Length: 294
Image (cartoon, rainbow, N blue to C red; front, side, top):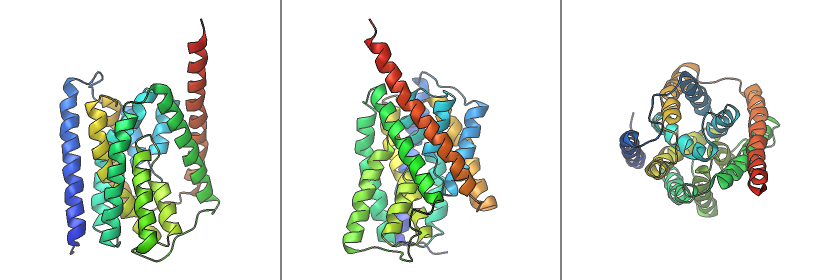
């Protein structure tokens, strides 16, 4: 199978960025306060979220909800843990989908690079934010995610078109939106659902969204991950659990299961995510009340 030179170059850049982040991550074990092996529960979370991520559900909102509900990771460390821990899984996803799904190389490369640029600046900001600001950001992100999942199930989101490429103002809109989504991803707003909606509105074939959103995440997550790791704004053990379980989940979903009836699962995700959103925002309120006490 022949792969377009632009796609090959993009894959090379993605794998290089991933390798750099993994080296930085491995070296951080010497200084990370929780440099330990992951628990069984953390591996299971990685497996489940990456399994459904490969099928198009997305992994950030479910992982955030689970971490919050079971208090597995401090709130302020959740964004960095998501970015770092889910990186190897999405690297594998990008390798699978970029080489096997048809999409215009220029559109693919443009949106991926724009998302990575947005993530670099976004991670620099998020890594310096206080706990309350991160809680508000993630609570809002979960509310958005829950609304999107509900809209998908209710058929309120367009199904997409047949185009494999964009040009003119549609291309400009896609690139600008990808830049913004890359930045927002560093606070826990996953790119999958927003990217699928955006490309559907612009008339792109639904299947072509997969290599774009997976390629974007595969480049932006290592870029942002380096910043979170170097500033120790992630949880080492849980992130490793996401990776170990996630790689198995990706392989099983991509090559064995391939497709599932996901409507009922999305409704379950809606309930869990919205509950976690109110829990996250309630934590901010409770912290504010405690801080005002004499």
